[in-house]
Image (tube, rainbow, N blue to C red; front, side):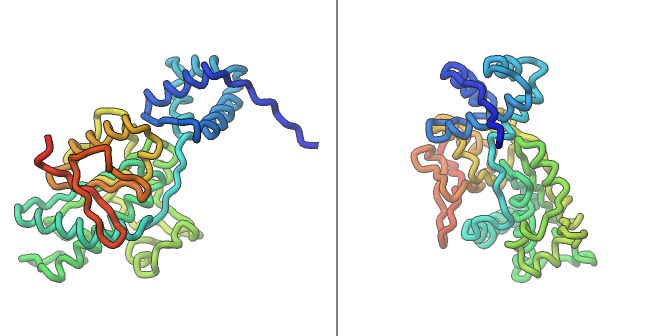
Length: 301
């Protein structure tokens, strides 16, 4: 007969304390619809810490010794669901319209650096996808706009004078370790076609490893979007399926930060079910073939 472990009671006051702490730390907001998920994760962490009350757990989280446990709790509250080339219509818009616009504008003013920030990158499929799309877009761009000098051989993924910088950040150390390793199973690789696999991956046992040339374009780092110290001067920011964790006030604050983190005329990509409608007037919506992005407006202050 299976033994049922009794759950430690969680009072409304304790829940409120913990909800407030989580909101202050990372901006995640758990309303009544998601309270069950929060309670389940709290019970798991309480059991792991072998504590007998949620107030004791709160005391641990707010102590100097509890910093690691707080990081583990926050990591357990996010669902690291991602895949290569997720939301294809949006990435088609990124490759065929947004990158084309940025490459043209940058070449005109002889600015050869493209900066992309993948905020909430999870296990790395999104930033690697963007790096692959940029390499392909640049190759196609130069079929029609040849460089005025000889490209070195063997041809690099990013031909000089261009430079691509992809910063990928997350608040889950476990997800970042997987992303940095850059080795994916056959199941993870399902959306990646044969030609793309040949160009950007190497078979390593039962996994596919991201090739060094692509890997060195992406830098992984820990970032909490609640902080004010966020990467600046980006041409593109992808923050997809992250704002769903935030309430409206925190969403507005985050979008304001993104406006400041983008270069003039830069683009913001949010999740398929997310929108800037009613949250900001500092962006214009770009919509093509079911793909949506938001371009920073310069008239707004």
